[in-house]
Length: 137
Image (cartoon, rainbow, N blue to C red; front, side, top):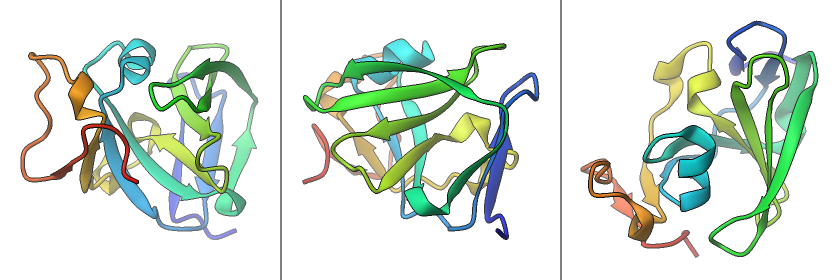
């Protein structure tokens, strides 16, 4: 697999790669993403599931029901706690990779802000992007 995207956790126990470029890049402002990141939103790149490969280590998962009503399984390093990805039941053919886990964070080029109705006043949606009060339909 020729990696288009590569990354991992802070301690190096988990590594991944994707042979495909992202199909979408978004800033998610849902409350669950705020809880899981400790910030105002979660920046993610979505790649086709068949293109993604965990190349080192294993992820621990925590499943929740997101603001959309769909199940989200959040994968993170069990050693250092770094968030790595989300598996979305509403988009079963995609994997949402956390932009902060990318080796080259400049590969993250967001085009949309989603769930902006949940954006806190101190974390206004990024200007110049298409906004969705909930998820894109």
